[in-house]
Amino acid sequence: MEEQLLPLGELFAADDSEPEDSEREDSETKDYEPELGGHDFEFVDKLSPGQRCSICLTAMCNPVQTVCGHRFCKSCLLGTFRQGVGKVCPQDRISIPENGGYFPDVAWERDILSLRVKCKKSARGCDWDGMLRHYEDHSKLCEYEDVFCDDCDVELQRWSLNTHRTSDCLNRIVRCENCEMEFAFRLKRSHEDECLRWPLDCPQECGVHRIPREEVESHVRDECTMTLVSCPYEGAGCNFYDKRSNLSAHIDESCEEHLSKTWSKLLRTTERVNELQQVEVHVKMDIESVKKSLKEAKGDVEQLKLSEKEREIENLKLKEDVLQLQRKLEELRYHVVSPRKDFLQFAGRGEVSHNAEEVLMRTTTSLGRNTNLEADQCSRSIKSTSMRKVSSRR
Image (cartoon, helix red, strand yellow):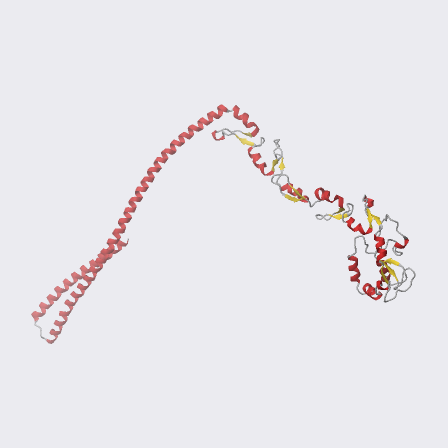
């Protein structure tokens, strides 16, 4: 028995200084093991008084036996230690030694787990009974256990989960039978307000039902008997404007009137066509005239281009003539000025006779006149050349 004893110091240390360990043990407790106290079940097999915990008065869970021979639920015994009454046996108040105070009673636990119990949900209708050790497996499948819907977090019994998911869950996915779109059931109302294929009645109350929303407009425009329409012979002058339901009767009653209006419209159209044909002939003639004028204008442009080149050549020749005339003018000036200078030099020395002086003066005067005439001709030639350049630029 001493080999099964737990060191009391380690147990108390784990209980007092490291509460995390006890919490970890509690988190690893099986579904049929309560966090505190014993097994609260309705037993089919008889539960002996020794199998009940004297603290919680239920079947022991994880039973431990003290050195004084009393058995308790492990959680119940540790609970008395936490309440500050000292580390003593709750049954006879005997102190529990520091180095060993209690040990797990595995055989006792095995006997308790072998007892048959009823399902905790028997009041809801579950008729399962079996050994306590098998209750965990049963609880995972019990149709009366409380479970949560994964889609909406509603708590309900397992047996109704499938029905809830397919019929009651607000977040279940449904498919619109009109447009085949999938959405959450809670969005059904908003989808009905937006679905393009949702069936609607004619807004003009013509008697047609279940028209897809996207086709209502075309129905009112093209098919609805309550829509106001014009007569097909409106272009011929018919003034009918009434419900589409009255259109057929109007056409039947107004055949002669429509025929007369159509014939009149045809005659007016024919006259207009003839007028347009005449206009077309004149337009074609104008087009030909414009084409001819364009052709002549192109010829004039080409002639102007040739004339421009000829004027450029003539301008070059005139420039050469002007340069030649300028050179001749300079030569004439030289012939007039140079002899007169020589004569004046001789006259100053008294070497020239009076007759010679008269002859020289007459010769100089004559040369001067000729020079002036040639100078005037050169000036006129230059002016004429300038005028030609200006006219050619224009």
